[in-house]
Image (cartoon, rainbow, N blue to C red; front, side):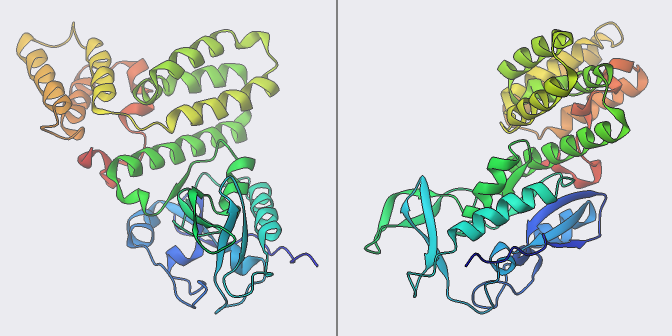
Length: 328
């Protein structure tokens, strides 16, 4: 008999941007042994900006706490989730169905933080075992996570462990706020003109992440009048979010900084230009963080405003108080 599908999660009202999260990361005692994996990053730093929807897929499909652990077995590309004690205890379909259910029900979330290495929630590199109990050659993805990511390819998804990396953390949070920005645009009424303006605002953010997709999406938007908006808009946004998955490098950030500096070439004195170029080069070489040349650029644009540059999300893609660019 199929396991009943539970309601999708408990909302923790904290911030204004809603994201899903593995419940154990918030300290909820839902793991197989009655424990949790409380994350200080999620419960302290990010909690000021996000409204969490806490979900434990294993508890949601009816598995008790404590319970026998489950693990992935079989083909790493298409594993099954079974009990480690009772091999007949197969919850593969229930976890997959619940992932699809959450993806459909939580259509207003802007991202998802998953628990790493979990046979239900792991985003990647989850151990898969052969029938004889030995580890398989390859790794897999948790079944709930796999179903969620298949159903919502545009949704920013990351594991808590990977978020300890400052580059991956900044990339994920940038994508979360871009996703929220798009949802707000849809709520206010998506028009072709509004989509073009949205793309213009993300021009330099896209250039920093993926120059090839920056060029392809630019051409697509320029020619979008030939395609019905209802067809073009979701395809455009999925492609944009896929492009933004690639973390920007020091080289690509430096390239964008140079483009932005070009808007100031008539406004700055020679010493000011030299100072700015020196800081961009120091950043490119790894001697200073991104916030250093960015702060000087913002200072100059406050003195010499440019309406087009002022609209660019690249200048501030997430709340400044997070200080994410201090570590890049």
